[in-house]
Each structure stands twice: as structure tokens, then as C-alpha cells.
Image (cartoon, rainbow, N blue to C red; front, side, top):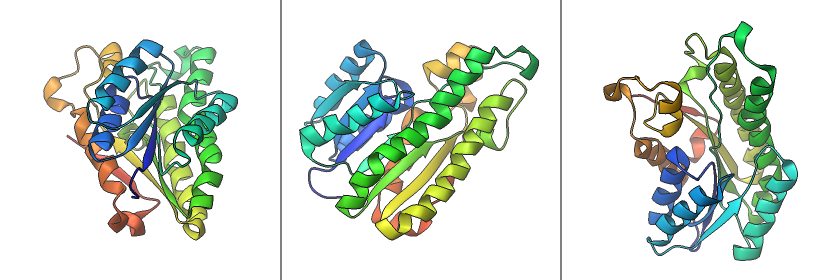
Length: 233
């Protein structure tokens, strides 16, 4: 990546997103951290800036394409470029099919699917103009191995995996690489809110997921564009 490279991370207020932002900052990236909670974003910004890199904390609802476009504009105003875009924001409601509230289902699809498309669509012309870039979509092992209560969530992540493959094929001519990273259970507040008794010895540290994201940014991973990388305990 060029000196002064810029990475955008959605869902960066906490959990996997904050950890990705910190790891990439330590690797030399300036960070645009996007999330809905201003307080959580402030904490992420403070943590990132201790690494010596700049951080723009941008309150963003990624299900609103206008706000996603505003996020891109904010990055261009600050740095004039975007080298990496991480679609990390996600929603993981647990409910059996007959019991899932329709509003919950629609919100989950908006966050897990629509927002991935909005992010890719917004950053694509920027990366094309620059001669390339990397997009990483955070998926889940539930895309291939969902358990009861995760049918809708697993299906939304299966969409992410297929979209990643198709987007990578489109991006090859423009030097745009696209990957999906699909972890198992990760030790985050999202996990504990839904599964407070999940065995801690079966969870991943968020930094293990962040390390895979960082690995995929290496030019040596270029021929693996379109891959879904599963991260297991």
C-alpha cells in the first residue's frame, strides 16, 4: 500500500471493527471509523490516534446510501484517497423462522446485505480511478453452518460470500480486489448479548480476525481475490 494509505472500517465503534481499525493503524494506515454511536466512535478514534495515525470518526448509518456517500466524501476531503474498505457492520438476531419479527428481519438484511452493496458501490469509482484497492467483507461461518435460530442471519452471510465472488470478478480489470472473511464465534459484545453462556474456550479473539484482514491486504494475496477465508477456533 502507498505511504499515507487510508482504510475505511464500518461498524468500527467496538468489537471486530475497532480491532481491525487498530491493527491497520498500527500497520501504517490512516483510518476512517464509521458507526452509529458517537461515544463508541470517540473511543475508537482515541485508541487509533495513540498509534500516531490520523482517524476520522464519522457517525454513519450504513443502511442509508446517502450517509455512505457522505462517508466517502469525508475521506476524500481528509486524504484524497481510499485504499481499503472493510464492510464490517453487521446484525445477528437470533430467532426461529416463525418467530422472527419482520422489522428485525428487514433491518438485518439492510445491515448485512444492502450496506455491503452500498459501500462497494460508493467506493468503487474511487478505487478504479486510483488504479486499484481492496475491499474486505466480514461474513460468518454461519453462511455454511448455521444452527437453529440463525437461518436468516446465515442466509444473509451466504449472500455476502456470493456477492464477494462476483464483485472480485468485476474488479479484476480495474485492480480492485474483494475478499470475505468468515469467522466463527468471536468474543464480542454482540456474541454475549445473544449467547451469554457460550463457552469462552470456543470463541476467537477479535484480533485473530483482524490479522486475517491485514494479511489479505498484502499484494501477494492478489491471486486469491474472490476467496472466502474461514477463521475457526
